[in-house]
Length: 444
Image (cartoon, rainbow, N blue to C red; front, side, top):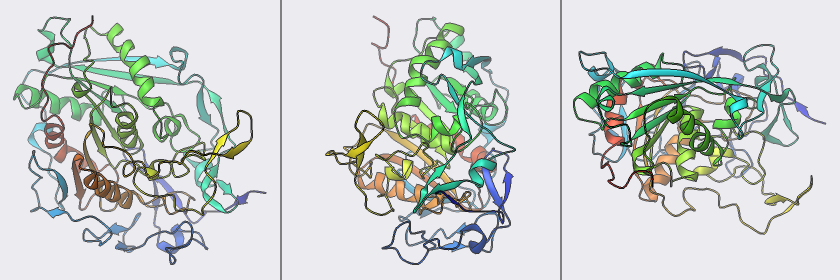
């Protein structure tokens, strides 16, 4: 018997960035009765430290929350130095950087084409969730008895998808020999040349012209459809495995090179990943599982929380387990016996992944807003606070000696538009420090 937990008090709205939010919610309205907010030693503890529930739709987090790692608070309107490493607090004012505005410089050429599930082996068939509207099936979902982390989505089924692939080629590359390999950045949640795509292309135009970035290709990949658990987008982006990186490496990049007269570098130091929200955590996942392909990662409001679906008994907290232990009750670590049964595994899970793994050759810039997402669906599981997740990720990255820059943005929501335009030029310059083209980066 499944538990159906009504969340009718929640009013779902969609932000300009397509992320699910909740309108006019307080702590009592947001968390169902029985959610553990008082006992850190009990399963699925939800930490309320430093949260101001007077703001809606999500609480505002105290920048001086003692649970967050120390950070340098900057004068309003300034950004961290391009070469600085560590944690920084910016805002509350977010003025667009001059490089995010179209200027009188050479402009790159933008190509757009469609890709269908029939052109994929990795994601064919796709995943489609039957919906009356929006994310109704997720927001009104049931969970496994005693496990609020494991949402049940019986309305998902195999289906097809079509997505846009958009390729930006800078003007400076168009004059080069076609066999010269180009550095590139891959952006998830691409939308066909509008919005974030256009801002990214404008920033690249301006910074490449100013010789502050290498002349690089940008490839934006539209999500596979819908959002969250049970959707193609959620299946691709929220999974903690190498599959999406393999999709990009083996299916998208060859298609780009066959359609566009450009050669893409094979050097992992010349390849960057980028994303927002779930595609932000996916950008990190691409480099984490395949550092032989990608070294540089940039993300806004990355979803380092429990969104992975279907529920994975080997990594029950999804991306939350990059930085933190599973907060549920202790249970055996299981694996498949080759059939439908699960049996105890002799292999430890290795969770949390970043603290328990040898450092990887990654460089990571990421940002989160002070009123970013907080429990926007019925998973009252101790693993759905975006800010706490990103702050904890910064802490464990520091503990392992990673090259990273983390920006906590005051007066900013989920994938905050003004913060995006304010910080993207600086973030890209930080990300590409130390890049040098390899003389041996050619086909044999």
